Length: 194
Image (tube, rainbow, N blue to C red; front, side, top):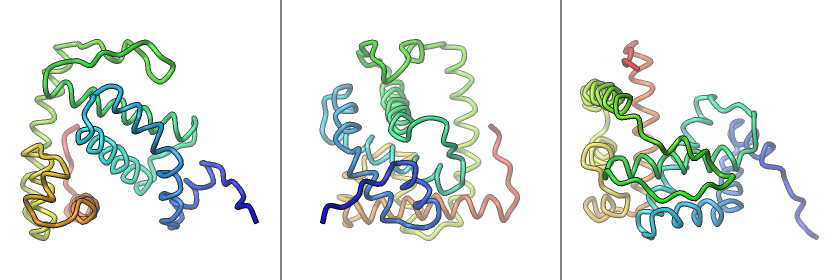
């Protein structure tokens, strides 16, 4: 018997309601398109893998805290996240990617406004310093992955090599670290400057 097709929006709702399998279905369904899009910008398999993983960490985070609203299609939203992460990567390495003007993104989002960049960097640095204090409350294995990822800018592949655990374990620790951070922030009523 052929399995019936479940719409993305239904899978998203199921995942938000606690069905972890639904996210797996969504990832498998769209992996090729998202992965190809990222690779076409960065031309590096490891980097593509990292940005792909980061995209879904962001997707999971947004869905878990209930910030996702069904305004457009799920795939368009995920493509936008991956596109922004590609731009972030190039900004960090101060060279912008070559974007052709396609329907996946707005060419104007690529243009840099250096004043805004400087202000955003100051805000980001301030938040990172505040977060650094909170990280101390995390279990050591989660703290380690978070510091390697955000402060040392290592890929999940590099983290797994450094820590001697699989990429999936590193991703899991990262996910729990982010969940725990959020809980600590809530519990201690910490307001991060944004």
